[in-house]
Length: 165
Image 1 (tube, one colour):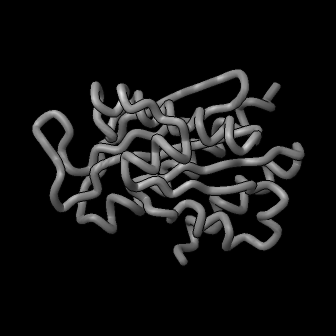
Image 2 (cartoon, rainbow, N blue to C red):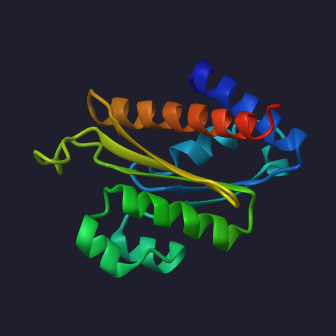
């Protein structure tokens, strides 16, 4: 596994476990890749509660409580769905933090409005919700890897910022 990913996951784990906090992850386009990285870290069970890999719209609705109307109105790759996925993961897992990722990794599925490489990442805790729209480039594997790196960095930034003076 990539050294940068491991180091990011280790730092994230230290930040969460140092405060006794837990994380849940909801993934679509990364297909469990974020969960794979965090579980490479020995002792991650102290800070990583669970992951939801919800690739289909049906699973997003059933497992995370995403609204069918939101899917219909905005599509699976949208800020609205990423936000509902993160909220669902936070609520269902009863953790301190949740992150979600949904996007178009390609090679097909893109459009003029949402080209291949469009990824939405939502971060959620009890007090804050933030969503990012990112545009990554490359082939499917590269887009997914860039999304995983971004998620780990964004989570680490959020956790550290929440406890900075």
